[in-house]
Image (cartoon, one colour):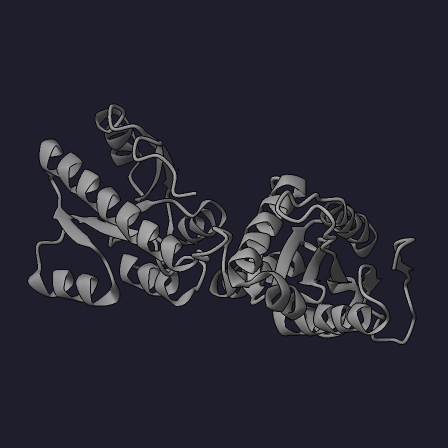
Length: 316
């Protein structure tokens, strides 16, 4: 999940000089970088939000607003807040340097710059950015299962809901809860219970699509974010998860059958298009699945009161 230290990094150059774009593209071409360019602050902000580059080289003097104002916008946006920014400016005023660092820039290079020094500063900033991302990523991993944890789910839910609302796309959430997990722990012991959780995580990742975000929600609960997926397709996905778990054979206890209950909801089923509404709607559907017999999939009721269906297993 952390990625290779040798993977290509994306660097965005925000400068109104085409000559600077051309120069930096030529001089940085041996640094394993994908170079993107923008000629003004508005374009720079759009590219930064869409691409999330690892590093931005930012000029102070831009035609529509200052680089300082652009950096403030970048740092105020939760999606771009963590992007590394180096000011590359003709200003040698110490107050400009202080202001840049106070706003969150990681470095400040003055023009005309020495290319060997600039390359070294770019490499240093990228190394630091990779380290910060690696540490942040580890903080979002569940230690037992290796899945993303609740903290990561909360962050990605906010990002995915905002993106779905902005672009008018479908978004669904699936939640799962292992049936009778306490009894399983009491009967077979907590080490085996941990093994079940680990195997459940493996089965979720085995069935999940590459774009799905699989998380351990907490305890014996899991959550899967399904981008560009309506509640009908999300129900099919949840049923595949359910069937895979029910069909698992446990070598230590071949007579044991572990099952899970599932709740499904979609942004189309909630009036307030928010992460909290989607999570609460899915959790309510999961509770209904547990209440009505377990080992089946329940789709949340639309808030207008229309029941949109449920998929039940024959063995529920």
